[in-house]
Length: 232
Image (tube, rainbow, N blue to C red; front, side, top):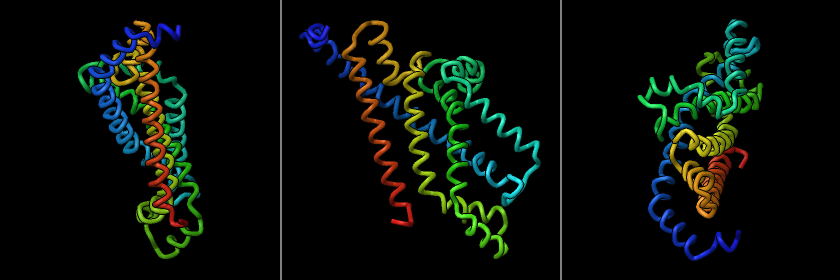
């Protein structure tokens, strides 16, 4: 198998595929990952704040039924496997973007799968804030919104950045799976050429490129979190 994998014909065909198909696939993967991560943060961060601030001993207690409902919805969405969620959301995806296949269409299930995960990560980060800092702000007469925006979120930025990095790498992995429904990107390249056409060299190179992207995202996120950490 190794002889066939690195035969001159196989190498020549793999190079042609890499030269013509990989630039677009790489761009699609980055495009989908960045947009899905941004939308997931926009939806997930407020939910994470709500989960912490709305508790009975939080800065802005909310009705128990509302908190129970929010927690239940987040847990249900997190428990559905991504492949099944993509299928379940086909009508919603078609209603939002006009189609259920393609690079843009894959953003909808990616966001739906990721924002509950981001909400839990944000909740975890906000719970790390020193309660005495919040109590000091309350004693100075700060409103709940001021405490959230000027105390809780700024104090938890290093942890939020670290968790955003985890979310981005997770979404990158999900984007590879979206290739099964024609989502485009490196995942589709790996599936099309590795699974359907038995061009394993192309599949291996696509996977290696995904690994490199994960490493780049993790390195960038770790450096940003270290810079934002006041203890450093």
